[in-house]
Length: 117
Image (cartoon, rainbow, N blue to C red; front, side):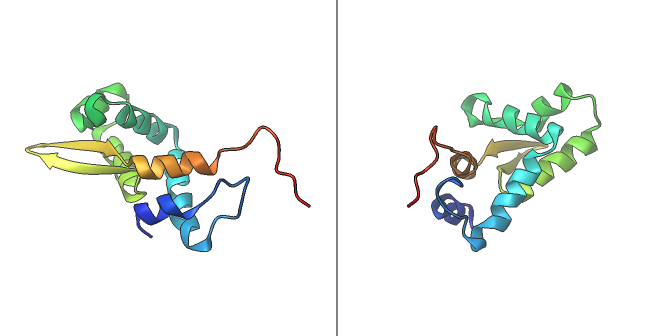
């Protein structure tokens, strides 16, 4: 399922069931964010000025090896949360806002539970 199809697929969890064709992609994205390093990376990418950030700016923020950072970035990319673009010897990452909005909307819970009759 494409990121656009996921973005258009679902109402918040508190309103209706997630369609079976969307759960795999959505679960993969939530799973990717379940790791503390990846959550920090995602935060850095999503909040980067201009909407993108170079791997050269991400790596120094952690006390882990470059290959480990690359692995975590690959997981984020494979989950559809980020895109990557190589420019010369560096890779720049950009958050996929549509998938992030869908994840956020799924967790939107009203202050009062829905009334069912």
